[in-house]
Length: 278
Image (cartoon, rainbow, N blue to C red; front, side, top):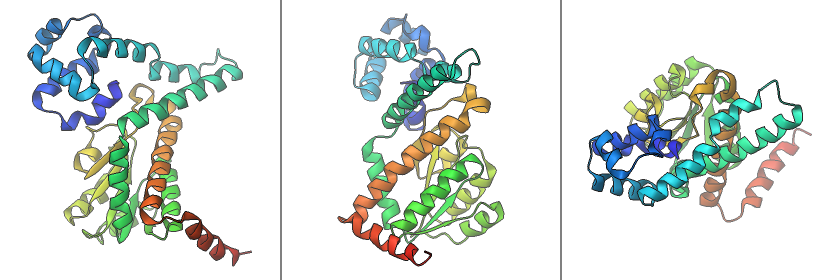
C-alpha cells in the first residue's frame, strides 16, 4: 500500500502530498492515530484526509488502517531480508523467495492498473520505431523486450553501448516511442538519451522503482515496480529483474492483442525465418 502512494505521488495535489508524506515515513504510527490526530500532524482537514483515503484506496480511514496493518505484517522488505539470511536452510530460502515473488507480482499489479498497461501498449503498437535504453541488470530486461517486439514485427532498436544509445536518441521523432528501463531512475546512460528523445518530441515510457525519481519525472508515462531501497545493494538484482520482466510480459501480451487477432500467425512467420538457420 505504501508502494501505491510512491507510484502516484507525483500526480497528487499539495494537500494530498502532505498526507502521503506522513504515511510513507510513518506507516506504523498511522495505525495508532484517529483521523483527527492525522489531521493535526499533517496540517490538513479531516475532510481532506477522508477524501484522500477514498481517492487513493477507495476506503474509509478505519478501513485503510486495517488494510495497512495486514500489509505491514507481511512487509515485503522484511521478507526480502530473510531470503539471504545464512541462518536459513535452502528449503526456507526457497519458500521465502517464492512467497516474496508472489507478493512482488501482486504489488506490481496494484501499482500499474491494467488500463495504464493497455494505454501504453497502444502507444508502442502504433509507433514507427521503438528505441530501448537500459544498462547493467536492466539491460537484460531491455534486450528481452526488444526481441519480443521484433517477433511482433515491430522495429525495435537497442544497443548496450551508451554512446550508440545517445546517437540513437538523436534520431527519435514524435512518431516513435522510447522505452527506458532503470530501477533507480538515476542512471545517466538512460537519463541522457531519454532527455534527448523528449527534446525531439518523442514519447518516453519508463519502467522504474519510484514515480518521484529523475527518470519518471521526465517520462511521458511511467510504470513502477515495488521499491526495495533499503535492500538495494544486496537484493535489487533479484527483485527488480523479476518486476521488470513481469511488466514486460504484460506489455508484450497487451501489444500482441493490439496488433493481431491471430498471434499464432505472427509466431509462425518468425519460426519460418529462424528455420533458415537450421
